[in-house]
Length: 102
Image (tube, rainbow, N blue to C red; front, side, top):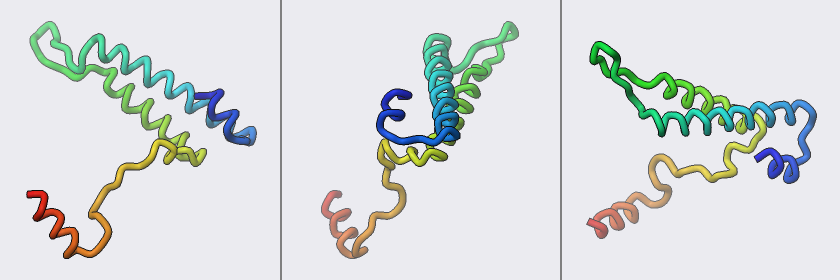
């Protein structure tokens, strides 16, 4: 990711530091996800209580850090955003399409 983004954009010194933090967070995210895949989302204690794997929190925090850095750099929409909410257009046409699909 570092090489790709650094070649594609002309970053300032501060932005390069933010990109470094993003890369570090992405590495931490991938490592935590790999460990989580191996160990599972939950574990059972010696007393039989099922608990969430603490790595779930690491994944959450690393992902949040990565996405925050990407947003700060203005690169958060490169992957394409999913459409959320109601579709645009004439409500009557949308209703007709929805009725037809049923």
